[in-house]
Image (cartoon, rainbow, N blue to C red; front, side, top):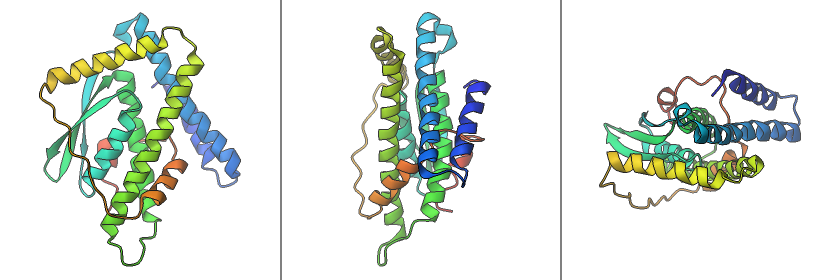
Length: 235
């Protein structure tokens, strides 16, 4: 992401986090930051359609470490999918190596958002009260599931809005082609990929995590890399 765009997003987030802001003002600042992130993705897609060299298909690996490694991996997948990236989860020690596939601009957006959201999730969990009699780990896993679910919904809405605003007749074809190229790249590396079974969780934290996801800042503020932030939750 360009320094000018990142600077603008950071300023909006700083305004949204200002205690002097009313809830309505804070929400407006956050909506604008999210809109800019989504618009950047659409702009880069249109530019790459004219000049493919500006935004090549690529991949990168993000390490997700214990504790709650599977839940963090779920959050990464929840961010990657709306931003048109695919990810493959590989076991690595007590955690996972998440192999991401996508266009360079989309991979950049995924890592930026994932890093910020990990920090926000850690703060949200620290302030969440575990109901009496419930195992803390069970509550936290469902809290993180709710958080990831709501974040994914918000990102899909922002992406759809940016696509509609672009009003480019060829936009749907451009995005479909990009998705196909990402899928082909993934299939080249993992020709026999299997889908993991659906996970069952028993805690009661989903609604609390979903509410935190609705408040989450969908932009980045001075992040230093997803691998480092992935260590934060549950310490």
